[in-house]
Length: 254
Figure 1 (spheres, helix red, strand yellow):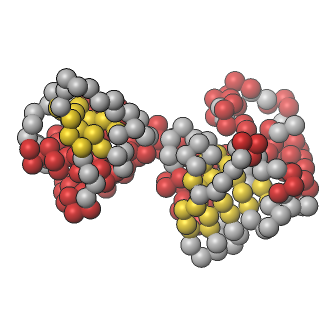
Figure 2 (figure 1 turned 30 degrees about the vertical axis):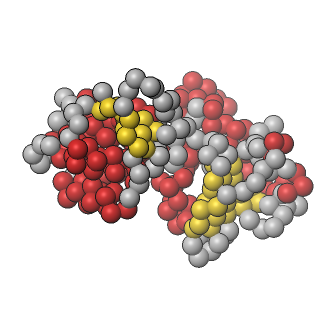
Figure 3 (figure 1 turned 180 degrees about the vertical axis):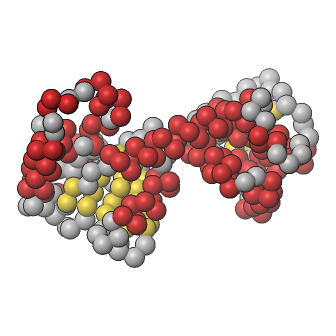
C-alpha cells in the first residue's frame, strides 16, 4: 500500500485527494509529515500543497455538499487528529465517487465519523464561548489564555468580535502557540514569545491593570450573591461546567 505524506494543512489534504484521482493508485495510507517515519520496504509519495489543485477540490465539495456538511468537514479538520485527516480523505473520495446525497448515508463509516467528530468540535467551540474570562492588562487590552482540545480559534472569532466590539482583546491558544488580536477594527492572527514561567493561563500580576483585582472581586461577589445554597446540585453543575474548564473561570479562583 502506498503512503501519501502531506504537510497537515487543509490545502495539503485537498491536494492529496486531487493526486489520488489523478493517479488512481488504489487504497493508500494518508499521514502527516510530522508523524511519518520512512520505511525502506514501502513506497511513499510527498504531497506538495498547490493552491490551484486545492481550490479545484474545495469548489467540487462545495458544489456537491450542503453548507452544513462543509461546516462539518472544516470542524473535523480542526480536530487535528491523524484519524480525522484519514476520515476526511476517504469521505471526500467517497463523495466524488458517488451520486448526489451520498453524505446522508450514515452507514458509511467515514460519513458517520465526520459527523461525530464535528459534534465534538462544535461542543468545544460553544464551551470556549461560554467559559472564557478576560483579564484587563496594564496596556488596556483584555487577555485570555486557553488550551482547548481542538483548534477552535477560527470558530469562535466572529462570536467575540461581535460581542466585544468596543474593546481590544487577545485570545491566545497556549498549546498551539498562536492567538487572535482584535484592535477595534479587525481580527488578526498573532504569535507571542513566552518564556517557560509565562506559559500559563493567567498573565503575571505585573502585567495586569490596577483595576483587574477589583473586577475579579466584583465578579466573584456577583456569583456568590446569585447563588442559592438550598438549590445547590454539584453533580448537575459539573455536568454542565466540567472541572477542566474551571481554570478559565474567575469565580472558581480562590
